[in-house]
Length: 273
Ligand SMILES: Nc1ncnc2c1ncn2[C@@H]1O[C@H](COP(=O)(O)OP(=O)(O)O)[C@@H](O)[C@H]1O
Ligand SMILES: [Mg+2]
Image (cartoon, rainbow, N blue to C red; front, side):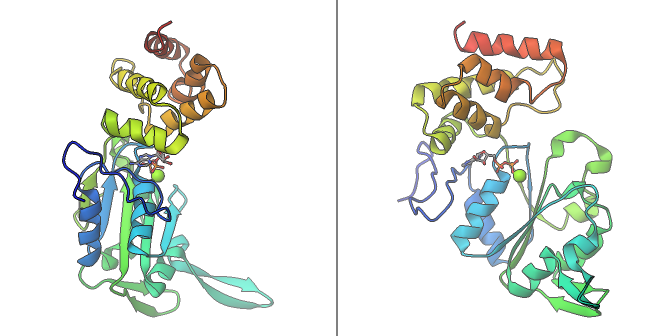
């Protein structure tokens, strides 16, 4: 069945796949990128479904997934591998990137802009038509198999030049921009993930919409789908809705008490208090 534009692009009913509600044509784009051996970059705010999408695609394509959560101490050696000492000898241990290149599959670098700059050195030869991974420490050069794919993601919203991607690196990837899902789809996601009733899901999604328009409080981040799911879980397990929203949708977004109070007013209006 081809979904029309008015129907939801819900994940196939195949229970072995993770639940994923598509936003647009990203499934087809990912499949084509994989077929054509092109690396893929996904950008979008925190909690909008990037990681879920990648694990869904790995299952759908039947590929092993090597996920690396990047952080500011992550170096090229963490990706490629290093010599370790054990039982009086040294031995080489592949890092996740090397394993993905050797074994085939998807290597997913989540929040790639957090990683140390020396990691780009190992990514570049893998992201052009050579598709090779030179391992300096062992003298090996690995040729990536046809089912190897590099996927990276980051949040462009931080407005931090040091944490943005160098144009010369960015230009090596087919790129996909994610936003928060439209209300109907976000409601399906909240229901799909938690099983709460449709009225409550609608209310939470409307609240998220209202909170996301509050630009004047220069919040670094807005309420994510992930946080909506947290709120839904708390309410579902019997927590007072206002307190659930405070804990899941307000306090995680700001440390400033005045801003929190302003956000709570929006919560109260949306819950009819
Ligand atoms: N399109 C979607 N389909 C299904 N679940 C989703 C979707 N988008 C977000 N979610 C839910 O929101 C949570 C956060 O999404 P995640 O992929 O971890 O965000 P990101 O990697 O963009 O920070 C997921 O664990 C999942 O519960
Ligand atoms: Mg993620």
